[in-house]
Length: 345
Image (cartoon, rainbow, N blue to C red; front, side, top):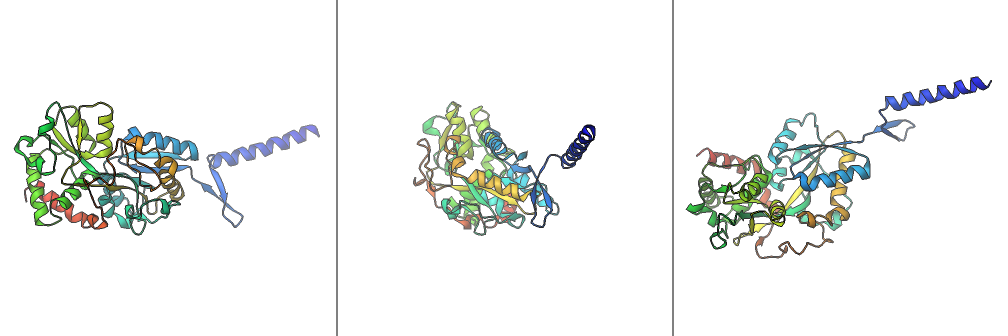
């Protein structure tokens, strides 16, 4: 009798072990009809931010939730093109990084979502239909290497980048590959006359002064300038501050003729494989806990209840021009016109 009981117990344990093995150790939840469905513990993230500050946040998210994040890093323009190519069978859940103008070109591929902190985040920093949300803000800035350019000779305005002494010495990324570079293009057009013949005449002069030199990503600009490969450059504030605060050969200029605080979005990809985990990741990034640490990571928070660190130029500084959704219009047309400039058309 005793042996029979042992055999019964062993049979039960074997059946249970087989069930766990068949389900890969995944959690399950009740569907409401008495059955259960497998709960995924995976998330695929497309992002273009530097790993130096995003990796710790991603690791923390994984530890808090038990959700494994598969990270695919590339330029925002490249990731947007990938999302377009995968639209019939999306492979990723979240897109994070790059400027808002890039997201405007893929709005129909993004899933509207209202996160729990809608009242704590400025409404202007998101898509009106909630297809993307600003996760941080940053302006585009000018940088220079003080070993190559004296402070009195450093560019102080966008126009200064057109000076002959900087021809071929400007580090700048390709707007068709880099969301940050496309944001710079958008800002320059706004400051120099608009998306019209006047604005594009200035852009033509700027392209001529690049002298055919274009980088694949905005991260290459602050690296190239600090290494002395280029004298000056255009990049996003976070990268510039990170290098400056680490003691690199780099100085930062907020153009006197104006720059703009652009929201840097995070978005859920429509019909992605793990939408619930995507929502959890967006909630995590926009939480007060995480946003309160963005400043020390050289990023501007999007939350109204979090202060900027003292080393950052205040948001109400006169160098910052107003942001508006109108700046995000005609994304594809702007990119095509830029391509035409590069090809000499």
